[in-house]
Image 1 (cartoon, rainbow, N blue to C red):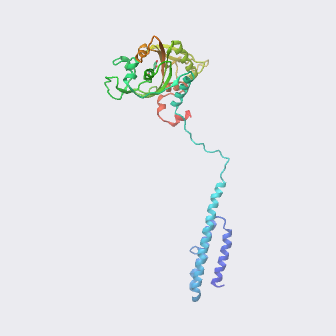
Image 2 (tube, rainbow, N blue to C red):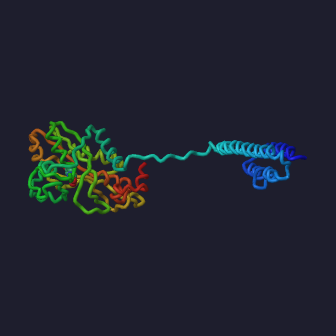
Image 3 (cartoon, rainbow, N blue to C red):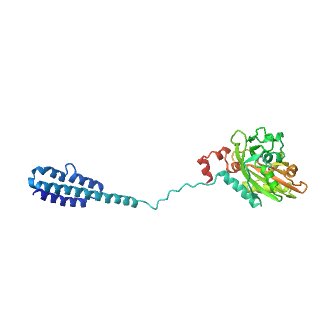
Length: 348
Ligand code: DAH
């Protein structure tokens, strides 16, 4: 057999081998077998010196042609196999497996409790309004019957924005409560008034598990002819039952806030059940205070131009985070501001 016949035979053999190659590994072996360093074509080419001189150019070109043909065919089949493997991988996809649940966000727990409380008052006929967090001394104190130099100012450790001597009523501060909206709203409108005012408040205070230097409050104000203390009690009792459950009792006790007279605080019952367990986790008292309230002080009504002999009203203020803490068993108010997902995800 001469070298040309040998080339033809190699080509035929390769065609057979190529058909039989079933995966990438076998194709790799074929490459080595035919065109590797000691592959059959390579070896044959190396024996060119034993070919007759006049046949050498023809043989050289034929052998090189075969080499590149083999290399091309192998590369083509490698491509086919690679795509095929991807396909086979796709076929291995088990579409019956449960999907991965995407993580979805939710409203912040503070927003949730604020909305829940506001919704209750809306269902009782109140409107929801908001006011500025940067407030004038005039609304935060003065018009709430807390003039300059009044010792009651100490009830609200204040973060002043300017004029730290707080020498005039235009001094600005971060509101220490939502009560200034009572004065602002009454000044801008006339009775009947039935509003709740949710919003952020600030105090110059150290933090601990029950105090934050920033927190939410929800203020309430009702003013009309003939509003009396029974209206206050009825409204707030209804609210307490909707948040804490129908079987809870409320208790009102005298308290002092300069802008109401009489002023009260309201507590909800936390009595032991037959097994000795209390409804509010971690609290061992029979009564727990949840808000401050009272009949709007005649001085406050006069200050906004209302005649206290015609109009009367009641007001209340509460901390929604504290209410959520009591009802939902949260032991530290700072959780609300720590952005810890372990806490936040309980409220999804
Ligand atoms: N503003 C008071 C506080 O921050 C809470 C409060 C008490 C509001 C009695 C009221 C009220 O409207 O009548 O401590």
